[in-house]
Image (cartoon, rainbow, N blue to C red; front, side):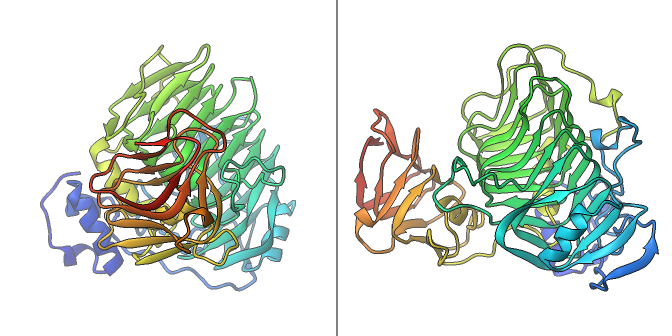
Length: 500
């Protein structure tokens, strides 16, 4: 993007957009170039809930206030998917969801449940926060669009289940907060709490969504799915972000582009036996186990992605499969960085796409990834963690994820009594963070983990006090590891391992 730089007020006067503009300019993207791509125009206002609209045939984007074609448009908000979800196959010309069917509005869990399982094509516009009192995985039938209205739409304590269906679109809302406190690994028999589970489905487009603090996987693409695109989404504050596979058949074709994956642990994504996985222009940061992993016969093309502070950011393992890796940036990463093997496939032979310069990916994805309104938390001085739900969050990882990157002032994460089974990390871009047990008694707050380091303190100026760090079983290595400078410890008990 090139051209003469113009004054901020000439392009977008809205305060939110000015903030996003400064972020993008810091990455070297000029105002005139952004304006030419419609990246800086203000978003439209969504229509209010009015029941059932008489209009039939619309894709619902205008009715939901999505800025397709008139604001934040261009390559950020498109009217059809880029990638394999837009490719003709399986008797379909692409993915349009419920376009052509009735447009309906959902502002309660009961309405959303009924519309999701309806047998007719529907465009479902979600309004506000739909909070489910008990966790549900909603059955979704074919030819559906689920669109968040404007800013703030969310499905809370529920997810979506697609079995043998095709032509489904999800856009512009959050799926969040079905986490079972203490079950970070997602191993409890009642904890199959995915944000989206799709089995043997074709033509699914997931775009500008935010998945966070769920139970098992954020999105699981399973059992011979095909023609899937994940674009401009945010995946955060979780263990297992994205998994594909659960079959030995080499069938699935998947595109991932311009997603922001942050403060997660594993499966970012895990791609098993994919016939073609095209992963481009994604931003991965603060990942504690591994980033992108090709398994077995998977064919991967991974290009133009930006990895920052990711352990084992890119790897391929198992028999067969190919990995082509080009133009990726690895900043402050450790471990595997993508040794190429084989020729893989040519994405350009399947569809047209345009690469963002890799250095510009973090600013662009931070500014425009996820639903309208953004996904980054406001700054706060104290964040409370409690297993019983009485605090702000029920996991330490979620609390750290709520601290803005390069936070302007000190933050205390105050942990109520209990046993927290999770690998906790105070990331290097979180400054002056104190992690403290709430009672002052180290035995009351126990941090433990099934393997490896239980607590990693990577931030400078951090403080840890009044808690116990251990492991589920005795081990020879560190359960507490420090890589930041000027870190202080007070009344911290180390069990079943060492500190260093």
